[in-house]
Length: 134
Image (cartoon, rainbow, N blue to C red; front, top):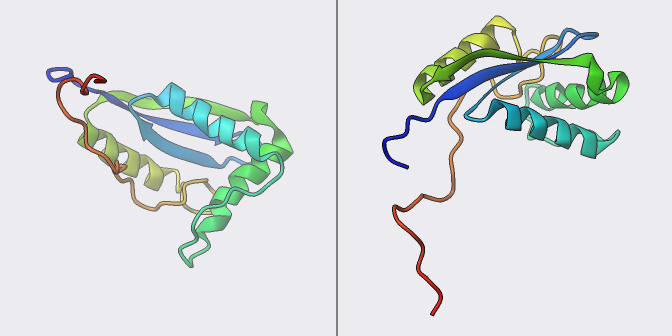
């Protein structure tokens, strides 16, 4: 694994009828978009549950579910805004795009976090192989 440079992409999911946009960042943008739509499909009329920060942030994510339920999957377009970036460059660019598209504002987007941030893993990877069974 060492020596390989992992590249990141910043992507957008845009609802044509409402003109709302979600901005995301991933090392696997295609897989991440599939995961977003899998979650939206699985809710089937239910609201997405996300933590509200007291500023109406929960309604941003529920708008995404509402728009998906009302307009259907074909109403959404996916874009790769930029790829081939390292982690820090990608987070900076993601933040720039969140701000540009006003993606955290209820009337413009679906992002519920105002600041692009690196996801944290509750685990750490170790070098080598796991122990074999006895």
